[in-house]
Image (tube, rainbow, N blue to C red; front, side, top):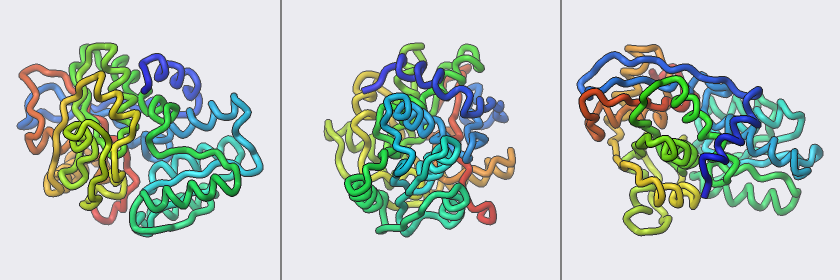
Length: 311
């Protein structure tokens, strides 16, 4: 479990390491409401996960747990690896990143560009995770989880502090959910401020919805267009604990809706969103979430690590 205080501590720790990303007002569309995009795709490394990566590594360094000889290790569909490789390069420690064999080439190439040792293992995040754990056991490297560590989730939640500061009277924050680190950080902070959170998942990877129905994290099949960034097999314990306290609105979106929203983000705003980021927008475009008249909504467009030739 994390709290709003954890998010505020993270903001203080990482403030000079990350970008404060802007809010962009959306054109008024069929969904209604006053919609703004949190342009987190402009974050360093092109993804929100840079916030949690710095929070995790800087906190570990404060505690004397970041060994500069062995550095950090991460398992990722791509984005968490990018963020942790970048943070490690800034802090001057080595990084080893385990990714599935299905990880997009654009992400693998960028990992190498940041100086990380990249190891491709298995077809899903869960297989890369197991390999990363074996590496931790043999080397003593600091493990940086893709989503289910307090520092990772609290770091991600710092973008909600920016939303609340920059968008006066915000009623609702819409976020995509994979393993749930971003959701957990945002919801923990938003709940304190009386702001509702809409948790959006692909129909084909409903980790949070399945856990809410079962009362505990459960494995789901991983498939669909957003699997590279929202492809966790189960929701994290932290996210489920936060959901139990904050009672988010859970909605599911189809792959077709995700693809359409990704295309419209590019056509209308020149935002090169990856499919996972477009999922949050799809909740409004496709009608899975219907805002009330006058509702002020911030939609987190959380990443842009995508092959631009497919836009």
